[in-house]
Image 1 (tube, one colour):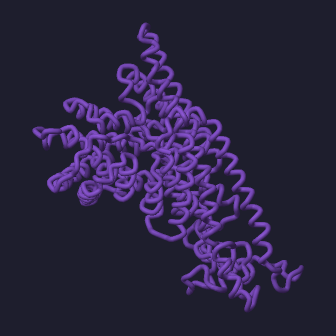
Image 2 (cartoon, helix red, strand yellow):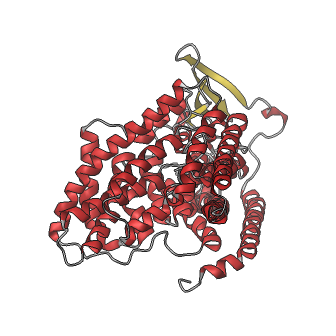
Image 3 (spheres, rainbow, N blue to C red):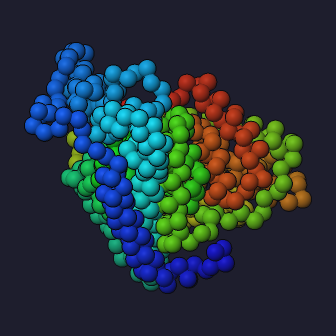
Amino acid sequence: MQAMSDAFFQSETLTYAVAAIAFLAGAHLLLLIFRRAFLRRLRVPARGGGHGNAERLGIVKSFALDRRRQLLVIRRDNVDHLMMIGGPSDLVIEPDFTATSRHDPYEIGESWPGDAAPVTARFGWIGSYIQPASRIFIGPGLFQLAVVSGIAGAGTGLICGLFRRALETVDRFRISLPVMWHGEPLLGCSLLIAGAAVAAAFSAWLVRRFSANAAGSGIPHVEAVINGELPPAPLVLLPVKFIGGLLAIGAGFALGREGPCVQMGATLADLVGKTFGRNATDCRSLLAAGGGAGLAAAFNAPLAGSAFVLEELIKKFDTRDAVAALGASGSAIVVARLLTGPAPDFIVTKVATPELGDNLLCIGLGVIAGLLGVVYNHVLLGALAIADRLAHWPVEVRAALVGAAVGALAWFAPGLVGGGDTLTQRALDGTEVLALLPLIYLLRLFLGAASYAAGTPGGLFAPLLVLGAQMGFIFGGLVHPDMADPTSHAVAFAVVGMAAIFTAVVRAPLTGMILVTEMTESSQLLLPMLAACFSAMAVATMLREPPIYDALKARTVFGKKG
């Protein structure tokens, strides 16, 4: 598989896309057949069936929490359910309020979704033999959740693979324009500026007109949905995020592809879960798993996608969540690689083997990353605050102004705009001029903040990795300038710096280390990464700087999209 060339994938893209769609359709059909043939065979009619059971649903008690929210005890088929209504969305707090003492949701006597009578009540003594099979195949079984998560992940991999290929095509076109128009620089520069402004304005219009939650990264919105603070996004978010992100990032905005991929994956997985009739708990697991699958497909990093679900989105370990996350990320990678190929995002060939002194130096690098992470958060939130003060301007005008500035920069320095993968690769190649890196770092820092505040779709991870690689390369180039091979030493610190700055800003060290390791295939740097991430997280936490997605989620929940 590794020996397959990029030309092979490019020539067979259409074939693989058709194969992926056929796989999704076939899996969907097989699961529907399974549900009809197997599930109905095990179910038997409820006792006392007929018209005497017409009264199956009713409100038992209600409790007012405040002026809007109420707690309701709803009885359905002799099973009480505790719900909260009146908030941003109705929330099932306890699906079986009469069995709160149970700890294992798959014990004998537990209810099946949509079939509330207990297994023992329906089957009597034979229920003790049927129940082990139901743990795997029917109701809330883990097998069915795993199958649905695989289908959701495959769909996410297809969408995100196509999104990534489209971005690569648009980026190549933007970079080629200065070469194509080098004979008429005034006209070429004007066209690039106008094109970037129009693309950014149209992207912002799509967000404002059709799906306000598509603005920015989308990860804060996904976290708010998982926490029950906001309802899931509708299906219209998928084309808005895809087209809007393609226009904004393709125009040269310093935004990442992972934000759109995470939100599209989460939205698609939630819709798949509802289509297959999963309960609210499983839909929540699937939504988070779809987000992780989007991250995995965006960066070709399946383990990082799974870790992201547990560490950042759900913030706890649960077996069902873990199974859904692994299933979705695995199937997403299989499908996405049919479109993008199996190669890691970055090629690192000059990494020096770390020594004991390097591990100690990485603690110092982490301290710097922690400080710079706090600066990054303040710059980003400051840009959003400026955008809020300019709210009387149409969002399309604000996005067009940022687009025009990005277009001008793209004409004179094409490599400095866009998501930044080329800049990261240059740092990892050791080809950057050390004296220019601080200036490029500051430029990318403010360009990323301005791009994010423009109100278009786009993520933060890829621009963060650029800053981390540049920070680490500067640090490594300064601490040992007299080494026999200073470049390879600086490259090692550049890899470590990517994980450290990610940890300082997002506060998800495991995700950061796994993500960078998978993207660079540099597992020998895990110990230096651990040292740097430790000090980066400690410094940012001691300075009482909240994780960036917590701050952005607060803006999202209270009406300001971040």
